[in-house]
Amino acid sequence: MVVDRISPDYIFEASWEVCNKVGGIYTVLSTRANTLQERFRDRLIFIGPDFPDRPDSPLFTESNHLCAAWRVHATTQDKLSIRVGRWNIPGNPIVVLVDFRQYYAEKNDIYTRMWNRFQVDSLHAYGDYDEASLFAYAAAKVVESFYRYNLTETDRVIFQAHEWMTGAALLYLQTNVPRIATIFTTHATSIGRSIAGNNKPLYDYLFAYNGDQMAQELNMQSKHSIEKQAAHYADCFTTVSEITNTECKELLDKPADVILMNGFENDFVPVAAAYSGKRKRARALLLHVANCLLGTSFGDDTLIVGTSGRYEFRNKGLDVFLESLNRLNRDRDLQKNVLAFVCVPGWVGEVREDLRTRLKSKEKYDTPLEVPFVTHWLHNMTHDQVLDMLKHLDMANRRDDRVKVIFVPCYLDGADGIFNKSYYDLLPGEDLTVYPSYYEPWGYTPLESIAFHVPTITTDLAGFGRWAKTLPHHHGIESGVEVLHRSDYNYSEVADGIKDTIALFSAKTEKEVKAIRKQATEVAEHALWKHFIEYYYDAYDFACKRAMSRLTENKYKY
Image 1 (tube, rainbow, N blue to C red):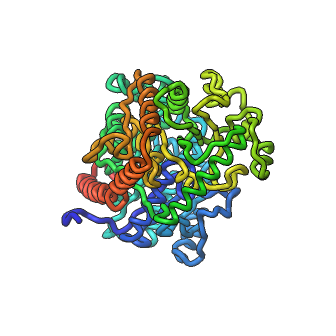
Image 2: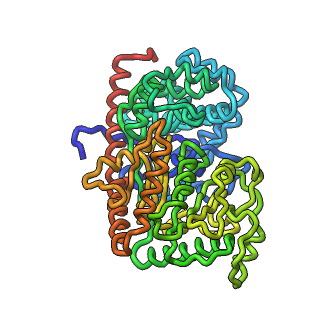
Image 3: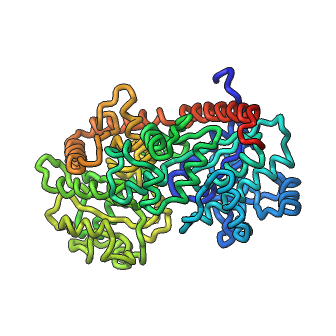
């Protein structure tokens, strides 16, 4: 512990993904909470959106006893619509869920004040901008109410806002409760993601892009504006990796004060005999589903490869992964049959009843089902990017193909109708994972993979991949993590790199694979929160000192 580092008395964190499982930020918050809870106990409070149509979320347990006196004051005097309880994750931290709908009536006044004080442009808002900004406003009101009722000026308080969606909360508190030290964390810049998602070259031209100009071109002015202003006005601006920090410097005109790399907790990773059993059951299920769908008799010597995550076809590298599998199918160095699962939630429709019927039967089938490369029907079967590319590459899972691809277009939540196991229950059944991202500020999926002893392939355009390369004794897939170089223009080389790595891995002996899996687990150990949490303590210290300086200078003329 650093002796002269200031530690806060209270920490508030606001995010759209508190008790709301949407993406990677949920993983950041929910895995880190236990580490912070051990140190700060119930002086750590998360704030998330309340959805009246989902009152019985399994992620949240309401309590009538927590903060009881303040809750009465907040609802009766401050007119807040809140529920207080605990988040059902390790550590069980306190959570305040706030219903923000009442502020729609004040929307124009709220936006006017944000423009007058911070020049936040909300004129071009559309989509989820209003919903997110009004949640942020409500979250700030919650913090203000709690602070004024329970705390004093001698209490050191941190408020951390995640992503542009909560930027308005940070700016409100800067004005109305200036003694609270603020941290703004961008996990991915809105404009950077948009540039990449619109198939524009991001990295080679990053130095030449003007963030404000690109926001106008891509109709992202409002989200970019709130993100940029929050970054500049926060006491401590943070992001999650060096590669995203470069993006922030160029597109937000503000480098991060502290980089908060995303850690992980392995407390739900089974060990020893429990892991062996889970892996065996997962492999058996994956092979059973494949054999029923394909009419094959793949055995346990099959090389099972997987990818997963958000359905961002180019950004997540799904395109280059499929291209690599097509090339692998013709590669003479391939030593095993390969079964590749693409697990990304699309516009899923009905469960395939023909597949479910086969899964329930004890018969063995030697003929494939119709459309033998998808486990669930899609609403957009003729306009799906994965299916379109499989058709373009003429990958039809023919009997003599050594590489077969199965698209699983649903959330693996344990109730999908085919696997009926969670993603974490199926992941151990894979032999190798591939995440060849083009745009990936951090990259939890490859980190989760190695935590479950499954070696992975990623790229140096992912924050995790770039971090993994800095570790001592990193030697590619032999170390459990293969990090391929990726740029704006080397798509074909990346496809060949994936192909060659899978072919190389297929020739490994059982003893060699066991050693690689052990190496993968050791890499994951370096990324546990007990190591990365120190960066948060640096950020708290930085924010507290900057807030003290800000108040002394009366910088914003409160």
